[in-house]
Length: 223
Image (tube, rainbow, N blue to C red; front, side, top):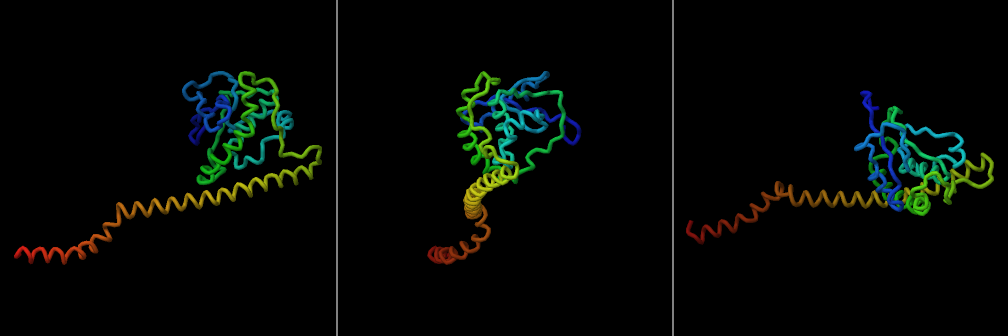
């Protein structure tokens, strides 16, 4: 629900096309066809998500490399399905959710491209094998951010190192992208100024430059 207590609605759908997560939202029919009973889906959004502790522990939780939360819900649902679990939308549930709070807007735009390709490469094959059979386990890369057979301390250190490497790679690419976007914005602003507003400043100069020609023309005309 929003600040006034009005229900926000739901989000759920199919993992299709399996190789292009950017279009999974296109399969969301919950606005046109609001659910009235529990409905299974390939993915649901993580606002108000309830998950069994046993399932969480079995798959290692959410992938920490997806911070700040871009596609983390679709990744988690897909991972659950790969282990043979079902994902369902419960329309009687109510929650209060402030959306899009974890990531600055410019960073979110960058992540849409950065993480889409990563997600597609990771899950495309597994999702294609799960199509139409969401309750059957399927082969997949399982919690590969965790070391195998390690203790708690070494696990934390390993995950921190993996996430640190991912963040470093991401931020370098983001800095380059942001610089390019800034350059395009400056260029666009300069073009807009020169084509639509510069006349206010250059009109007097153009008039002064044209004045001698006008005077000469008048003299030739005997005026």
